[in-house]
Image (tube, rainbow, N blue to C red; front, top):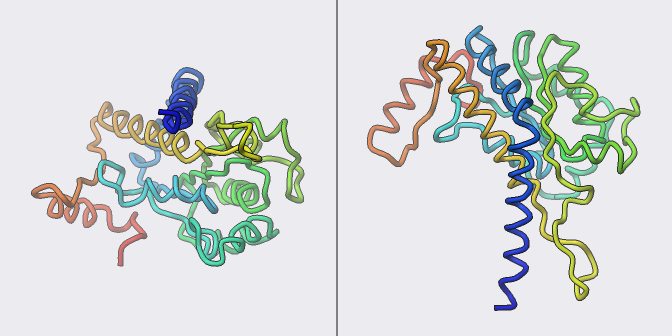
Length: 250
């Protein structure tokens, strides 16, 4: 039974964070979902970016059963998830000018929306991605922990954080260090919750966007599971209908 207590504590901590997000971020979730719906209805495209583990939440939005077919991954080679060597991704987040090179070679254009996920929001890559995207006429939704802005110092040339360069900011409420548990017998804090909370926060935004489109009489371009009967045929029709706004297919 003793082994279950850390698991219970972790799950309780994650549930507590989800409750905080639900109660404290409802207006921001509504604003972000409405912005995505506005963009889809106006013919714009949707993109998501995150580096390292923040990329996991971005990838969860792309080509996803029950998700919007128009969400595309803005990938930075070497910084997508945990690649090998894993330390390279951390180094790339601190490289000045990399974001401009990525944006210049991407299909992003004015009128699109870019969701940028960065837990700390302090490194050059997410900050410059936000400023560069907005300079190109792209609206930015930032998903970050606002606590880092008061608990750490910026690590980029502008001396600012991701939250300072967004049209909508979603605060994940994750504490600095991203570890929910401590034990006297363990020398470091452990059990991160950022992926759980950030993914749930973004799926709440996607749900809002889909419902907002439906409310205005626009069928949301949703994908279905390929593991249900008719799923592949459904997805084929959606992918063909929106092929000019989808960049993850060949």
